[in-house]
Amino acid sequence: MIDFIVMQFIKVGMNFAIWYACGLLVLKRGVKTNYTRKIVHFSLLLLPFLMDMFRGPSNGASNESGNNFLLTAIGLFSGLLYLLLFIQPIRNRVKVLNTAFLSVDRPEDRPHTISWLTIQTTANFLVSLPFYAYLKTIQKMELLFIPMLINGIGDGLAEPIGIRFGKHKYKTYALFTKKKYERSIEGSACVFITVLLTIIVFSFSFSPIQFIIALITIPILMTLAEAIAPHSWDNPFLSLVGEILLFLILQFVI
Image (tube, rainbow, N blue to C red; front, side):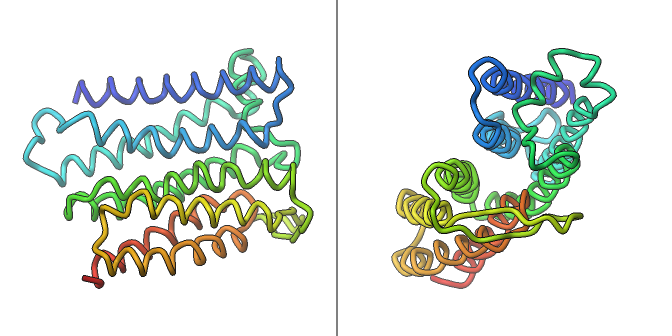
């Protein structure tokens, strides 16, 4: 349990370091928050799973995968308490928190920045935990990186590419507001290409038939999921669609 608590502090510390570094880029270098927030989202999702995958079994639970899974789930959701540091009454009184908050505070998301980030991250964890447990049982944990890399690289690049090169726009809604937000076909194309390349990189984890089906279905359907997802909810939608498709292919295709 002591190891588990220490690991939680390490995760929070690493995440805060990333937030603060990205906040300094916004404050000192004028980097757009649209770019830095993607780095923050990627770290929030990737770091907890990545560290749990490589830290080895916890003390007293080395032969109990159920206990390890429970600790992973507790760790993920207790880590969300870290986001409470960034509520307005606290961050306005602590300069380093206010600087770190700049890394995620897009003007178009105000005043919903923290609530949307918390809900989206929670949804991501809820979606990913069952897939994480499934991959552990079939000993193909490397496939967890497929939806993560697509979220981090594909969706991460979709927004800046759309801002810089997007000429063909379309609209999407967000939760709790009727305001419309813009996306671009060029940004969605970035998601499609990333999915395609990621499936090819992890082709060794599939049988030949599984690989062909994955290559045909996953890029198209994940790109559509990103396109129709509510604003600030594309990450959970991408994870959900990708993980369901991977589960179906691994479970029912020989």
